[in-house]
Length: 176
Image 1 (tube, one colour):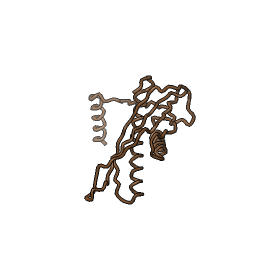
Image 2 (spheres, helix red, strand yellow):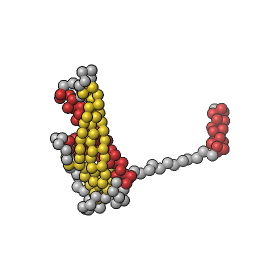
Image 3 (tube, rainbow, N blue to C red):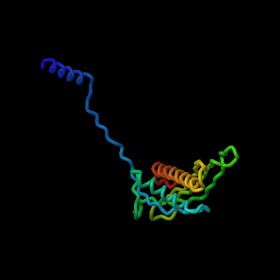
Image 4 (spheres, rainbow, N blue to C red):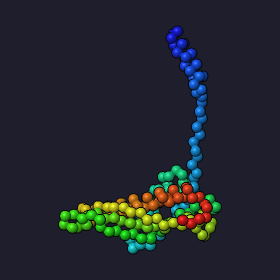
């Protein structure tokens, strides 16, 4: 008991000498942006790419806690994200020993308009081009599934970038 009381006294003295105190940390509050995702416009001959991009936009914005996705836009608060897929291209980059293409590089370009709800003119417009690779081995159905997965990955990357641009850019009225 005597030893325990000495240890407690020693700890109290050391705490007082070392200047330890209570430090309070406050978490930085993230800004929540209200967004409304407009239907994706497909300007390519690729059927169904608008559906893949819409799914990627929903996945990206609904799962990011920094955004509140509005079912009904709020005037002067909601930012309308209006995406269009402008082009898609693929070319072979890998070949097997019989000189058949087995790997492709896929490129997708999208234009994103950010419009404050209630206004007609976008406050920001930008084009994003992203690339991905897919393996075309296997059955034709498997190769097509890999191609669609590649498109979805590219779309998710594009919408992640859109989210970051929304958070960094605010409503400054500049087009980038």
